[in-house]
Length: 200
Image 1 (cartoon, rainbow, N blue to C red):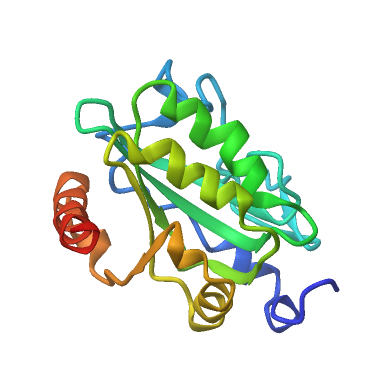
Image 2 (spheres, helix red, strand yellow):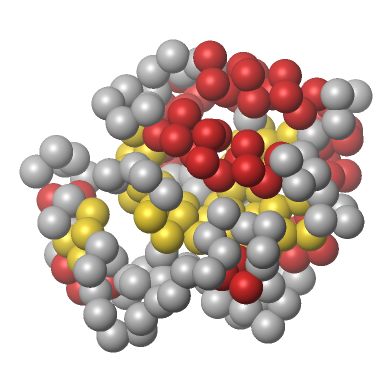
């Protein structure tokens, strides 16, 4: 198995990790004509997507990576922010996941005015870094719009590897354990306030 971390987990573990669903009444990416996932259909019963040969919940979206899946949980085009949840292994060294995420997801959203990205990283079970050029390019893209990228709740090992690669020059790491109990706008306001202090 490619990842030593995944060998400790069996199929039911991954099947039981669902994208956060309590905001579905507020936003559904497949119903948003500006979303990169517009028009997608999902099954609650047919498990077809896999992560290292383990089936994952069918509500996760494939965006072109073999090791990383996501869910676009919320987008606010007036406040210019989105919340993305990730599952799997973020691998820039082999898969160049940051390039795929940038080109197929965030650049698409940026074209519709999204400049502030909140990424829920608590189910990113491994992080492998490579060249930082796509991160630097992302920061430069957002600078003129006072935009930013924040990754919430990275597990300890993923956080360690992200810090070691010095990628916090381009994306901030934060903790917000209670995010599921908050409305999207409240999460955004708290992070935006904190980012305003850090950027100053």
